[in-house]
Image (cartoon, rainbow, N blue to C red; front, side):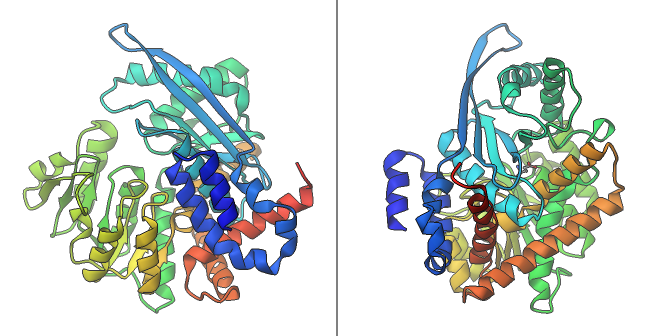
Length: 449
Ligand code: GLU
């Protein structure tokens, strides 16, 4: 196992997030490899860490003032053993090959856990949508799709949203794809409802992460009712995590964005959440304004270089990291434990550093890693693909029931795999092992390709 890590690091020494994601999976699957020598004989670990295809392209676009900019566009087609490549597009200045490779790698196992036939991929750009006009975002999306269209398709690779890519961007991307190909197909998910989107898709990642937390609590005959919850982020995942937590009788006291966070000890009510949705989705403003509107809340700036993040340092029962990777460092994890948090359900991808993960596992708290807990988003994307193929739309209740049953099945699959490999209650091992076995058995069936 150290061999494969050495190879990955030697090949791409700067891809730290990718090393982190690979190392966690390799650690978990060691006993599976030991019990199944055929996997090693087929050199499965080395085949898994090498993307099937990486596409890197220039995206030139013009701002409203007539100046020309150039960004990088990427699509990582990681693994297609169990279905077309599937995974979001991220538009954020931090985007680079290493970050997208980590996300694509995680996506392979996450998608396998959903029970739906989807391979893994991820893409995006270092374009920063913050502060850009609608017209600039449209021109960027069109320029991005002018290259991406030749690599994707409803049976080949189906992108969706992620950080910085929501319904607006999916609309512009889809419009250009349709024009270039002259066909109306389900090539992207996260579409708006009136032209092929699925009900519950916007809600799915947040709802799914809460359903997963409820399932974990049920193993201790407990529930989310009256639990105090820390939620980070204020985008799509954080908003619908908060919505579902409120519905289930929990109290949410924090939200954040890249500048700072609010602590509202009195709890974020439905009315306050409606304000956040308007602020973030329509006005595209900053979370700081929440504390101007609701003076009972306290706003604090966040400093990425600080020793710890104060958002994770409040008395609570549950934490729902829903912002971005590595947002919980070792000290934050310790603070969470010291403050009484015993449930962590990850709405973001890889939000906890390895030291924090080890601490959660050590303390035996209910810890749902991203690739299990946030799989609801891509699950409903899979359901959107099915509805597009059938040219038919399921009702809200139907999609929500399917989402709930998929999250329950992910939860039990993780527990069973963890139990089978002698680490009962360890959802990290469970998710990695169950996802791995499904993908790898398909690779073995399909031969050396
Ligand atoms: N970006 C989401 C994720 O990390 C959703 C991907 C999709 O719907 O394809 O899983």
